[in-house]
Length: 189
Image 1 (cartoon, one colour):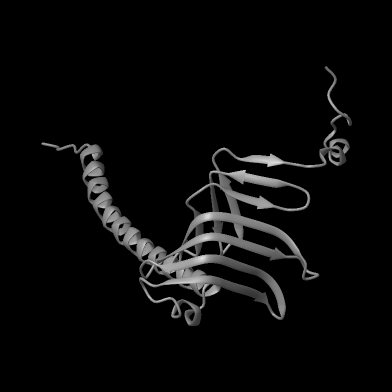
Image 2: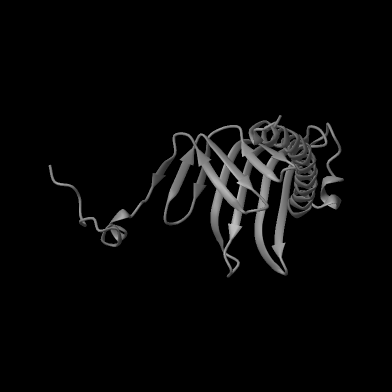
């Protein structure tokens, strides 16, 4: 009597056993990736916090205290980069500062004010290095004025975003129309 074995059941058993091994390896790999990601995020948060508010500065704001008439300059080497002025700053907890009537002056390379940012109420996340307005905000430059429902500034990337009902006003748009391929002059009725 000759027994014939179909290779299909053996292949299925082998695949099933191998998939269990792969699944275990995938779980280990996912755990390792998650741990690496958490370490990278913590390192990025720490460096963002130190870049925006150095430990010497954050230690000056004890939790629960309100400080009035705060001005914090920021320098790149010996060149003034910006000055943050607030009517009051309150450290809410280990992570957040609340700012009232915040005005940020950003200077150009010649040391002249180039951009002004206004926020009536804002919160600064010390861990994420992110400044968020709680009220509509405004960005002013000689060439334009922008307003929006919320402004978000990420200190690490130096990126600013205006969100919701964003309006841009260009006082002398006629200078830009030829560059944009638009006809110059006022629209005809």
